[in-house]
Length: 305
Image (tube, rainbow, N blue to C red; front, side, top):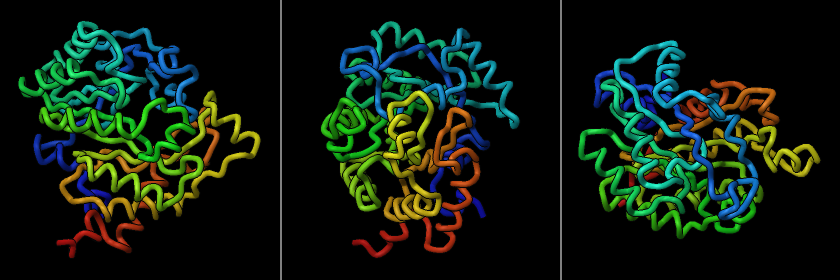
């Protein structure tokens, strides 16, 4: 049995809603980030090199061309897709610029959803109103917020440039308007252990959330963390420790919350470590084995009044 047997996954939810698997088509719309352009800081988050996560990075292709290329690249086709603004801070521009880019992304009839990845401190009310407009027109909208950790000390260490309070404010404003929020969490950040991951989960659940993405910290070339790793100053999560922590997070998460992702990988030579992150299936297999042994989503909440 696969992950869907133990977890309320984004893939299974979409299949129930649309009658088939829905694939995400990633877009690099040439946004930047206030933590890179000098508004908040320069150099970005210490783990960040978005080129390692987006193969379209620095592309000269238009949004429509990227979508067409994404359709062709997929080994298994679909009749419906979600346009995913993935690279950098995809709400960080003027309203009319954002509207033009989002409009272009959803103009084709096979695009049924819009995912917008961004920072918690870059989502003004006018952007939320724009997303609500698409949602009212029948587009399946997700606002993806990169929180990574609810610990303000950790956020400062990794140079995020925002606090948990900024995240909490944006989530409340978005969900008040009916916009679904997916929160990104990273396990293995410097100074954090298993108990810290659960504390972050508890804080996120207390604020309210619709979806979660969980990633292992992996070191990529070009990031600030790469220097520390090369100097032997960083310890990275082993696969079994990561699978255990993800399993526990899943078991403490209510069943209605949707997991968009439970692991991630990057390609060498961009990936420096850990080595197990170089393979797509390593993390997933280990997590499924853990869930099979100890129980799936919401297992620890069964007897909670």
